[in-house]
Length: 147
Image (cartoon, rainbow, N blue to C red):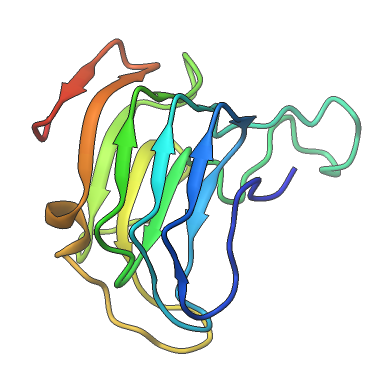
């Protein structure tokens, strides 16, 4: 399974995702910014079994296995009442640009740059989003504050 919810056009704004069960929510920056999204009561597991043989010799998907990925300039997003992560797989709550954003064991990847357009990392993504009552596989909860 690829990214389940991934708008991939310029000017995507004011989108509501409500009541979805999926792998990953990914706000990319390939064709422009994506702002003012609201994610309400979703389940984002961020992990996909390869029991169906579609991953070659791998036992788990190793590409974009993070529940929430917000690329550079994906700002003013709202996350309310979501459940994220897979127990035993996700072991790090978040990484914020410009730190090393690689690895699939993170719940949140915030401000990821790069890609085909060489966009720099954006540390403002993490301070511009609202997270309220996010329950993760790490047994942590975020009620309007950074963990």
